[in-house]
Length: 229
Image (cartoon, rainbow, N blue to C red; front, top):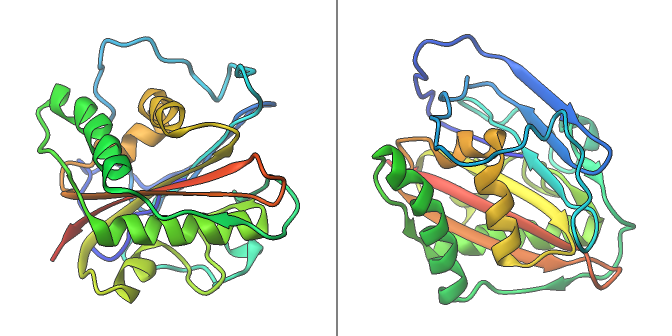
């Protein structure tokens, strides 16, 4: 899922729309209050994940994206507030991990590898956004649920403000599955829906986080993209 909060960013005048693509093995879901930027042709092989289901080498990966407009509208902790969330595993005790500087740099580098190809400014790894992403990943892992709606927050905009980041806009991609950092970054970078967040021209800061669910193998991932006021 991906989420854009706080400032209404003009997106080439396109009409607002809602997207909900589901397959047997991938979940690509989105709720857009801001119409996405068109994704440029990157001349790379991409699957239409809304049409072609794929079994990955280790197991099932759920990817999520959603974009929200000028304000969060969901009720914190309510599954009904995020109609595209996915209950991936049972809730329970999670292993919550702090993002290392190296992990955050790798995430920013992989994000910039796509942005540079279309002439967009690089994002910088940001410690606050990494902490926000890690906390939300932990929250998802404890609940076993992939969703943008937190237990006490309705979206990434609210979460970054709690830690003192003053956003002009925020966006978020999330994922869940038994996969490492490189695999998740690879899947986000090849997914047209997730690229709509990665290729928001205005974003400047980046953070990624992960946590392991109660089953001991499912990793919940969150990447937060933002621009300061």
